[in-house]
Amino acid sequence: MRRPALLFALFAVTLAAPALAAPVPPAALAAQGDPRMGPLPVFEFHSGFWVNLHHFLYQQARERRDPGASKAAPAALPGFTQDEQRAWEAAVAFYAANYADKDLLFNSDLTALKNQLGDFEDCPELSGASRKECNAGLPGKITPVLNRAAPVYRAHWWPEQDRANRRWVAAVAPLIREKGLDLAQRLAEIYQSRWPREKIRVEVTLYASSPGAYTTLDPLRLTISSSDPRNQGQAALEMLFHEASHGLAGPVQEAIVRECRQRGKAIPRDLWHALLFYTTGEAVKSAMAAAQAAPAPEAEPAPGRPLPGMPLPESAAKPAYVPYAVREGLYARGWSGFQRLLETYWQPYLEGRASFDDAIARMVSAL
Ligand SMILES: [Zn+2]
Image (cartoon, rainbow, N blue to C red; front, side, top):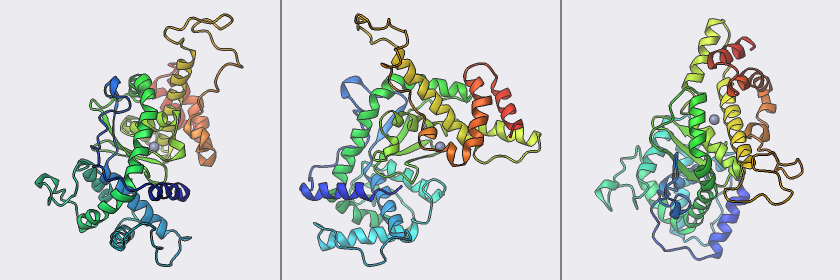
């Protein structure tokens, strides 16, 4: 999803305030929310300079390539010197020629590059000219392109984008602290899989592909947009766990394929993914409902208030969490058949009334 309005807003902020000359802070977010509370469970968040620059250039190159985009020479960027403008244009042109037609998730060159840029996030440049260990060994001719674009990005965009990423992490941190371990355990049980022992690395970027987040495997790494409206508030928690669940989906995918083969049925391409959305959505909804029903730790119930653990009267209850797939209309846009199957045959498994194998078998036989 493109958000020219947001980019314009960021740009305007950058112009209004003089570019910050402060050194870029280390990308791994040591504080991970509130430094007084120690590191977060489950996830390790990074607001990495190079990964952010990479996604920002990719996004700008994609916008230029879009059918509606102007074919005129790019307008002068206000506040940029000629050298800055030239370096930036060269980088966008390089991305347009080499990457804009490739998919961030499905193209192996792009996934490898994204991982390398994450690994070198603390380096001021990527050729090794500053420190030997900063020779990132990137493929092709991209190293000088990024090295020349870096000071421009650092001067005009990065401070504000980095702050936006850190604000996003700070906002979701309390939910992860409160719900993260339970959700991880619950999802691993559901998928009959093992949650990764190491914390899952999350690259927080302003832009992260059109769905607003994507996950690459081996190693399992998430990239999530801090600015995407679909990833805000409680939805941030669901998006993180949905993406992380891509690393657990193997047994579900295999079981669906096995059942289809046994029954001589075509394998439905997206059933496993609809199942992931459904499952994470229900798990987060339950976790939120439990939080709402639970009494505040030391609060005495006020006169006339329900006793701890009692459901709140309808008027006082906050509306239940609406899962992503419902809110964003995924079922309505072609997955309504899957939604019915999941509600009928998968939900009983989530409630402990059916086995994993039976649930999958029934879903597939009803296809
Ligand atoms: Zn997904």
